[in-house]
Length: 256
Image (cartoon, rainbow, N blue to C red; front, side, top):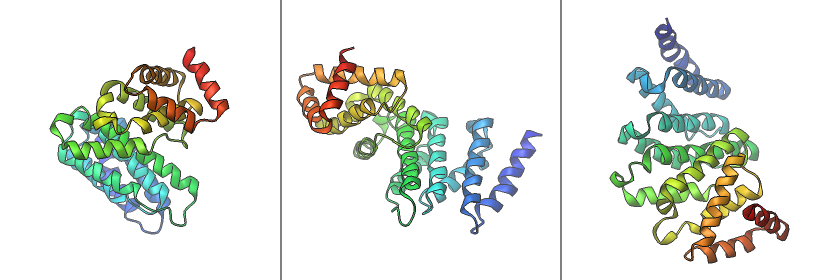
């Protein structure tokens, strides 16, 4: 029975909705519906032809001009990366990576700043999922320069600021990624160190995470401050990026 339902959704309902140029809201609904079905039946176990139907539709709409359509598409691509992880087909992950990078370059146009930012944050969160679940675990098999560029792009666009649930998940993943792959994220010659520190301090200052995430951020900041290779950069960013009041608040948190 469930197989028939999934078949009807993917073969009949989805094309009618996604290929309808009259309604972008329907397209958003269609993409969200497909991702929801795929998540609930376990995307990995979904029939292969429907996996690729979904992937190709997500890729198609990932650079759509309408922010809420783009948001649904890039969120789905992040789901794809998380669900398949290291077992993913490398060619598929390269396609997803290229689409997510291209999506960041879609201009705001006449759309609202809020809607544009929500789509942007979903895009950045999806890049984090791709890195965490696939690219970093398989870093020794991937092009080093391309991986470094993707990491730098991800870090440069953090922290997220719009969706509370997405913020909590994305920033927890950022902390875990730094824990597991710190030297890779910091990059050659610690080229990403300054931006990483900015992100960590912003997460702390604005409370952009769960209590556990904030504790993890505090721990990372302390370690950076105790490392002679990074302490001076931390001090510089701390004094430059934060108000005097914020510095005092964060000093209390870090000393607790």
